[in-house]
Image 1 (cartoon, rainbow, N blue to C red):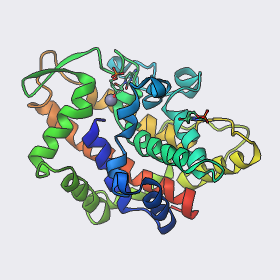
Image 2: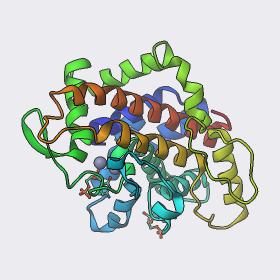
Image 3: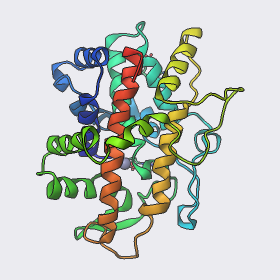
Amino acid sequence: WGTLGHQTVGYIAQEFLAPKALAFVQSSLGSTYDESLGPAAPWADSVRYESAYRWSAPLHFVDAEDSPLSDSCSVQEQRDCGDGDCILTAIANYTTRVAKTSLSASQRQEALKFLDHFLGDIGQPLHVEAYEVGGNDISAKCSGSSTNLHAAWDTGMVSKNINENHGGEVQTYAADLIARIKTGSYKSLTDDWLSCTSITEPVSKRSGDTTAHGVEEDVKRLLARAEDAAEATITPLECPLVWARESNAYCCSVVFTYTTGEDLCTSEYYTNAVPVIDLQLAKQGYRLAAWLNVIFDGAT
Ligand code: DCM
Ligand code: DCM
Ligand code: ZN
Ligand code: ZN
């Protein structure tokens, strides 16, 4: 996502933080970020082209080597993140690091900003797709301007949606999605959002572990492992893989359904994409809060 999408995820998460998570977020981010996950969420994009942070560029996505044009969408850990250098492993790494009291305040702030960002990116379908470099190499049109498919999803359709349906303000957009979560059309979905079982493709079970995994089990297992070893082995978690598969499935059902030459932002394509964008941003914001709540308060 672009700046607006990431801020939206952060502002939504901020609204659902439990007391200790909120206290950590406020003191860690401080006045620089208005003590909020909203303003802090785009940071990871602002540093990715700096030489000191070039290593972080591959952590924004996972190149799923599937076939979305043949209606075959899938994410496989070993196939798509075998080198351990993708958004799945990054979420595990920064979950461990944000919880680690032996790290400096600035390292823990950095871990928080990466989590704030990557839980957003994993909800962007083209951040979970290898085809044509996640759509970056596919030319597209958005409201008459030349762009590419990836950018249309990161920014073009998001900003048009905010302008046309949410008063042109990212905070209004976040407030509208928060209202859907609290009392509106998303209310009945939120338990499923945290169950990590909301997709048909089963998550692979590791080392004889056959228990059901929700956000709480996932985070607690990782942090328990991290206490065992000085530097925890970076293994992708179950929930981020489920989230990645949910996002990736939209590549087959929506993202690649355009017709050649179609203006993505003024057609039925846009009408079909907006509900997916709203849902993915709302869901990831809610999941980010739950994730931090388990880390700092011990429960979602
Ligand atoms: N770093 C990281 N994940 C790790 C270890 C380090 O993101 N597991 C980051 C934190 C710093 C940089 O790498 O930005 C250098 O860290 P260090 O000084 O600990 O090597
Ligand atoms: N991106 C991606 N998958 C890739 C490569 C890049 O999702 N295989 C994302 C990261 C940025 C956008 O595409 O959001 C543009 O990337 P870049 O500026 O590195 O071209
Ligand atoms: Zn992107
Ligand atoms: Zn990113």
